[in-house]
Image (tube, rainbow, N blue to C red; front, side, top):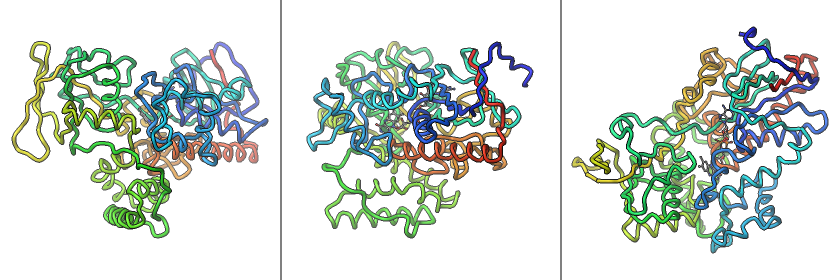
Length: 490
Ligand SMILES: Cc1cc2nc3c(=O)[nH]c(=O)nc-3n(C[C@H](O)[C@H](O)[C@H](O)COP(=O)(O)OP(=O)(O)OC[C@H]3O[C@@H](n4cnc5c(N)ncnc54)[C@H](O)[C@@H]3O)c2cc1C
């Protein structure tokens, strides 16, 4: 394997090399905190990211003005110990001057998602300028073990040797459509991946639309369609017909305690959550305060649960958790409410039983969840919003599959992402710890529990940066640089 890797030019460095694959918030955040922690004696930090800017990733690269952050700006910060930094940055930079809708009537700010990407980018900028962080604008195509280090190949023909690798690729494209793809193959208004820029442009103003999935992506899609002048009827389906909830009318402190005596089963946890919601209500607080506490104590709470109980939660409770924990921005909620009131948006608990193309239209047969009879709808467009396919992560990029086959990665037993240790080190199929391969961000949530929203992700990036620092110090103490610390960019 090694003989195939022949760099034509080499830039030798005496510094250890940390390679981060994926430059969204999870990857950019690790690079940022690692640079801050290590200061002058820093390792060489190379972030692989094909997007033009680091720190945006899938969520904050959107140019769609209907896409807003779904957590108030006052809670979205790259600094876990300074949660209001983003809010201050917005004010200092007058960053919502062209967006009067950003401020909700209760005073909270929900700017467009791109603004958050601008903020993260601005924090990274000085480190990129000084050379502390290198943005390698390329897609990684292979990661191979060489001695005790790693060799990374990318689609720009680059080869980089690294001592430590952090995988922060997070959100893969949505899962393949299965039978529906075959039935609707070639239809111009079957939109299977809404993350592709301009994906919704094919929908015409009067089109009848079926949206499959009913979470945050569906809410974004419906808001974007409305913003684009779409006026046709929309039916949005999901297995349980649940819809992402909005935020509390006024900000509240998190309420409850789920870690003093942590639940050891899914049933016990559910009982505790329900009881705490009743106790919160007695104090005039809504369920939001309780779910916020579950979220912030998510890691410890998750750790107390045996794997079988974690699996039960994923199987039975996750859909309910998702709609309460992922909340939609009030501006987006208002668009959905208006559409429901006007009879333009119908939300159903149903699945697609059959679909076929008839001329330009699509005849869809729906199987409602609680009824034997089927429903029929004629639509002009089908939009899939079932979200990223984290469970199939090893099949989404060949190099991830290759690392798994070579024994360096495995799927987490809950199916939520990649198996990792409590130090966020990758685990091989037999549970062996791969100490120089770390998992940053949502792909580590099988071990860390709630690790999808920005507040938990930033905490995790600090954690990973500290872990890397410790590992580098250990290597230095033992005078054992794993490999020669060479980054080669062709
Ligand atoms: C549409 C959407 C909106 C969201 N909105 C919010 C919100 O408002 N508030 C909130 O708290 N949370 C939100 N989230 C949750 C989200 O998980 C986090 O906030 C955060 O954006 C996750 O960032 P990430 O870096 O982990 O992942 P990603 O954003 O998925 O970034 C991963 C990056 O890896 C890169 N990559 C992938 N493969 C390779 C490769 N082979 N080589 C090099 N680079 C690669 C991709 O280009 C991508 O930029 C949202 C999530 C989504 C999907």
